[in-house]
Amino acid sequence: MQRGLSVVGGFFVRAILWLVPALALWFWARDWVVAPVAWLVERAMLFWFSVWVYGTELAGTEQTLLTTVQVPHPSGRAAELLVDTNVLMYCYGLPMLLALLLASRAHGIWWKLPAGALAMWPLQAWGVVFDFLIQIGAHHARFSTPITGFTPFQVDLFGVAYQLGYLVLPTLAPVMLWLLFERRFIGMVMFDAALDGATRSRR
Image 1 (cartoon, rainbow, N blue to C red):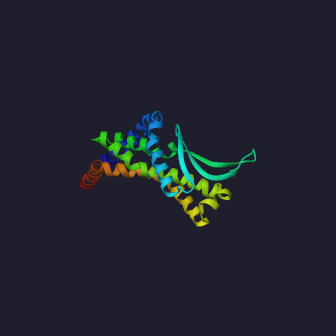
Image 2 (image 1 turned 45 degrees about the vertical axis):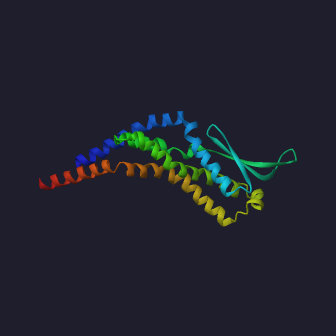
Image 3 (image 1 turned 90 degrees about the horizontal axis):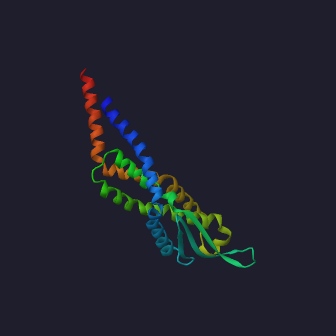
């Protein structure tokens, strides 16, 4: 299976080499990358938790959740609880997808990359939403629980969803999308491997 393995090896080398400029481009365009994800996050939080959420603010890649949860302030007055997160941490699947597409010499990359980005937006927003919820429900439970009504079981679910959105989805999503887009390339690798195997068996 030397030929098939050489195709796979060449692909991985190209993917690693393409990942560096893809990450540089992604970081340069970071404000545009996070904007649609932050918008989805705000829509989701306002839809599901409008009782205690009244909006978000985006400054660069940092999104702040605005809530009506009251917390003590050093001045002695009550202040509204604000929690924030870096949206870009959940968006690194985009340069991964770009590197994979370039490494496999994909045709139609002009539409596959935007389509992939669109498909990943809800998954990236998932991570940010549960980042906010775990901060509100766990880190600030003393002040938030009377208003949010979150139970310990719900907070545990938030924790699981947060880990999924932070550790799994950002990496898994671009790979799955690439597999979907590049079935022809994968089929070619499998065919080459099978052909080499058949040739070696005849010797």
